[in-house]
Image (cartoon, rainbow, N blue to C red; front, top):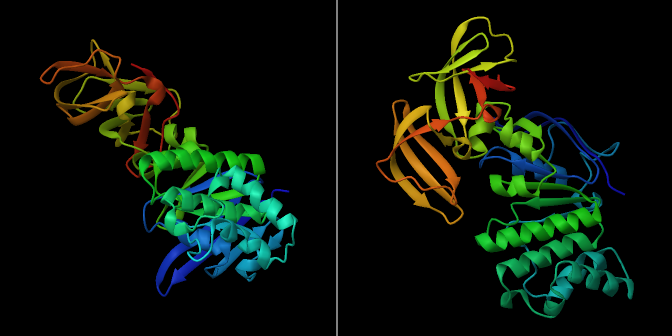
Length: 357
């Protein structure tokens, strides 16, 4: 049965350095929940607090209604997968996976049956007798995943498990992890600094910065409706344009392009703000922001253009099947209203939806 993880006003400090401050969160039973953020934001510290490897110095962590603050790691019934695989080099694949079961006094034939079952799930049955030293990084990570799963944990914890793998293996392994997690229905917390990975694998994402959660939401909402300017810029490449905000009208500084927003909270005076547009949201049009193509990079499925404009350098990404623009060509950019996000100077997102004016 899947459990709920409740974190209430958690705090962690190393001396005077506060890493986690008054952090609260609730992870739903059976969901795949990702902690995403830059290095040093506190995501791994929080994961280790949940695992019991780091102490909690304020607040509570609960599995369902049970407070686990002082419960040692081996009594929390967690499975954990680390960045560096952490497989035992002197044990075969089968022995590595069986280790946790033996510690729990699981006997034959149940032990072998459970090991064989997870070997099949992670697709390494043919490697059961092989030693880790004769295996690739991806194969060792599958051992680590199988070892975490075989004990039937209440919670699965992943600490940057794919960061040591090459790009192709990362895509392959994240699909395997997600598929197995969905089949098992185990509440899972996954730590990564990779935005694409988080978007692809998660039910919900918590974006962290300086020990605080900036936003918790579904991947599409995190990407399309970021709560603040940090989330917007962290979640992918952006073009940030200066704007003047006058009540519900937003004008891009240095251009004649403006938008009318039906809903912008508490705007009753003219002030400065920021308009955030992702490269793939620009479209080439007959009118709009004028610019000259100064660079073009072909990536196979997409083409990325760098444009020199009156308001600065802009990056535009378009499908490779569209007609390619030439370096030196003068073009115009349109911004579809449904992808526009306007932020006030303090960084909070003001926009909900808008109409071109």
